[in-house]
Each structure stands twice: as structure tokens, then as C-alpha cells.
Image 1 (cartoon, rainbow, N blue to C red):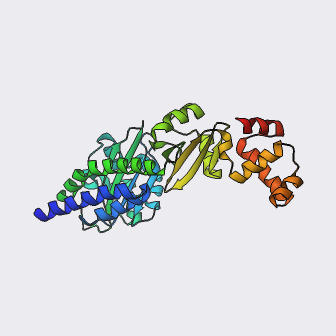
Image 2 (cartoon, helix red, strand yellow):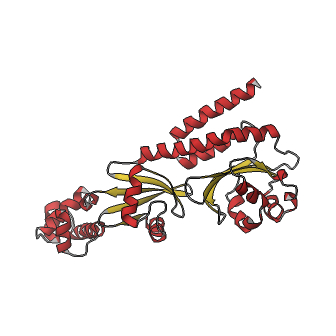
Image 3 (cartoon, one colour):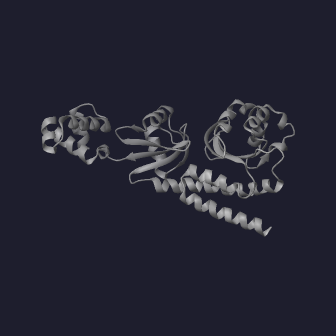
Length: 312
């Protein structure tokens, strides 16, 4: 008993230390690996998604291919364990809690095909409407069921895992934020999972909502890595299954590099590409490209608008 308590205490110490030191996806994967040191686990998953649609939007898998859950959508509407977990969130449930589960389509057409014969899982309601997190622990050996003590230990760990994940997200955002910007962690579909305090106000000013980034904006962020308006620049950095989103605010001219600003100032004063190139010992083509970047960054299309933007 003393050994079990000591292992539990050591796990919690590592859990909260890891939450302070690692990026979110890395934190989740390392935690699942560490969990397998408390009791035997062959593979595990930690993710989240929309409860009503049973759509997985975030996923970290340890010791197994991602397809173990991305393929699950084929049986998501007929999975009795998912039904049971949605009705009873916050509790670790085993497939043998459901007498008919091993005869179900979900077990035979999905889990067994992935060589999963023992499974226990839980769902936790998150602050975002309709969003849930889940943790699933698996065995490949049909003769090695999870023991009651292992389920009890998992249940005792659950609130710590949830709290540590939220702490990890908050700390990561605080460390990632630069002056004059707000940051948020979002899922691949644009759902805001955790946000810098200023992100709510800024996102409302940009797209009239703060809980989710609009689909057209998110599509551009995924494709181009950025989305701009005259008032702000939004940049996306891939992070596991989601993104770190940065909203930079301030004068639009602040988006220019020192060289771009210098070239733009000379250009609006009336100098030609060739004259600017001579002053800076660059080719006229280079100057032309720098001016084009200034137009793009400042969202202007003519010299008059460029003059106004530089004066703001």
C-alpha cells in the first residue's frame, strides 16, 4: 500500500512539473507514457471533440497509430461505450461494464481490428459548449483485463489530469505571448480551447465572436499561416492537432521590417526604384519587391493609401 501511495505521489509531482515545462501535445503524450508506469497499459489516447456530433477535433495517441481513433468515426453512432460515457461523464468505464459490448459492431468492426481487446475510457465536460475531453486506456491482450484497483487509480487521477492540462495550456500561453499581442490554443476546426485574457476582446472586434474562429478565417490560417486586416495581423503556428493563434495589434506600420519601412518612406517622398536602389546599394528589382511587400502587409493598393498608412 505504501509503495502504491508513493508511486501515486511521484506521478503527481512529475505531472504538474511537466505541465509547467512542456508544450501541450508533448505534455499529453509524455503523461500517457508515464501513466503506463503506474499499471500496465499497451496504448492510450487523450483528445477532445464535439459531443453532439461525436466529432474528434484534438487527439494525442501514445504507442499506437492515430487511425485507432480517426477510423472510429465509422462506428461512432453505434458505440455503446461512447453512449454510456456521454450519459455518465467524469467516471472511468470499462467495456465489460456493458454486458453486450463484445457483441457490438463497434467492438468487432473497430477495436478488434486494431487489436484492442481491453478498453476503459472516460469523458469530461469542458467549459466550451458541447465540447468534451476524453482519455482511453487499452490492452491488446484479451486475457489481461483492467483490474478494479487500476480503474480506481485512474479515477483518482482524472481530476489531476484535467487540472494539469488546463494549467499546461495557461502557462504555455503566458510564455508564448509577446508584447502587443494576444494568443490562444485552438483546435484544427477553430474552437478556442484556452486563450490569453486579451484574446476574447480582440477576437470579438475582428469577427464578432470569441469561442470559435470563423471557418473562412480558419481556412486561410491553415493554408497561408496568416490573416490580416488594417487593424491586426493573425498568425497560426501548427501545434499537434491544433494551432497556436497570435493576434498582433498596434499601428499597421509596425508590421514592416526596418528595411521595408526605410524603403517605403523613401518611395512616398518621390524617389524612384532606381534612385532608392542606388542609395541602398540594392537592385531596382529588390526595391520593387520590398515595396510590393509593404503594400501586402499594409493592405493598400496605391501610393496615396501607402502615404496615409505610414502616417498613422
